[in-house]
Length: 330
Image (cartoon, rainbow, N blue to C red; front, side, top):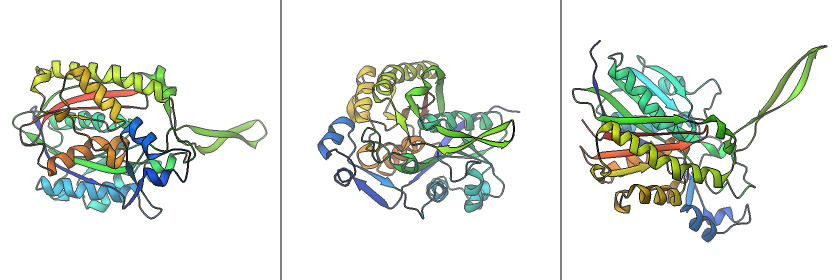
């Protein structure tokens, strides 16, 4: 098979209709707009109502991306859904495939939490580079409001719901210039959405465990320390693989976790603030959706233009982190 290049030719995004601002959160927990804003940079987030599903917002984002890429759903060969919060524990990618009418597409879920979009981008690229698929739809989507403890002010102020999508297509020149992925399970306890079960005896001597998932728990200080140290390092490694310098980066698009993290990473890399894409003030931390949502918004605002060099990095539960250097457009 002939090795091919990759181009990112379309983007889209979608969020639930309901927004929840910091002032509204003061009715739930002992906090204030000033406390949240100064510590996180977040002013509001979108939350899904009981009638809204992950599949629905992911499908809406995917339709926008396909439209920008000038593709029909039946042109799609593969759908990769990066999510930690599917509507169905068995996965939601196939439901999205059906809702899109992408009859030819293979579809599967990928879970790498807030790193999911970058891990998904690298995964999808391999199918194109080996000539297996031509047109891939990559979606990052999460509805974390389902799994937030709304009485825990350390976490409930951070997370929001959303979806973002991009189209990757085979291309004569390779626009994915370099990447690097990492995992460290020794720090797994820093950020969890754990399963909690109790024993149930089926018959004498045979016991199973049954239960449900518990709300998100996080050691904020450890996650901050991890991100500020590891993200600049991995971006440097990805730039080395791309044979590029930091000065050649047009835009830094990080996982939108906390404005302090975005600022610290940019400072360590010596990337000026005007090159940093940030929209977490409006959306909060949308996990796997945050990078494609921010990317799509910047493209539609005319900030990101064809041939611009983008350094993207995701980091989160696992702990996992990764970076990808790519050029926008064909």
